[in-house]
Amino acid sequence: MVHSRLASNRPEAIAFSVGLMVCLLSFDLLPSRPLHAAPPDVRTEQKLRESLNDNFEACNREDIEGLMESCADTMPRREQFRNEAVATFKDKDIHYSLVEFEVLKVRMPFASARVVQDTHVLDRQTADAGVAAFRNSTALLPKGERVEYVCTFRKENGKWKVYVIISEMKVLQAKTAERDEAVATQ
Image 1: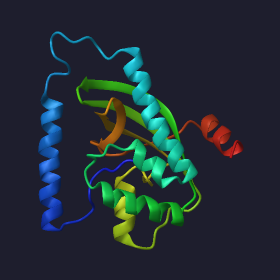
Image 2: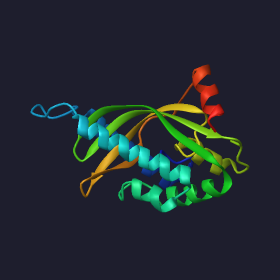
Image 3: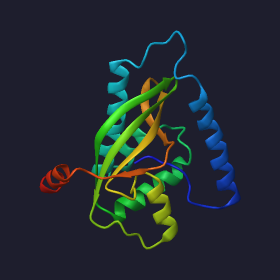
Image 4: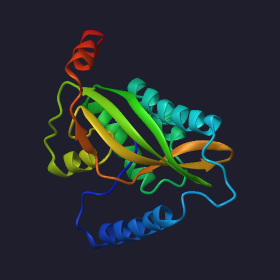
């Protein structure tokens, strides 16, 4: 899944996090769209949704190359995310699914969307606290089965790609009927 923030107190990690937050806050404080721009069109929303679904499908197949192809080349800490995804795929059997998707903002070359994701995994425990903190701060292995977050995308070479999560992962309760249906189809 997509990279969020580091679970480290090292000075370089803190400096990176502060710099990233300033960059992302700048993106967030900009007007939603230029005065002359129209709201996000249906095609843009479809392409953004496809980008995230490609990301989820690559994770479900444990296809590291497909996963990295779905992520922006300029994604912060890309190599660390790749290494952690490889380790997660070896350690866990996880299924990701998109429950809700709403485009919030498009300001080229970036876009943001509210995402609700289901993550089904049999064993959420990870022995190494540092590894667990990183996985739980990304969408690789969020703390809850259903989470909501804001994900950004970046358009690179004409294609939307997953960039970075810019919000906390909010754990949501899945409705009982949905949960029972999801378990029955596994």
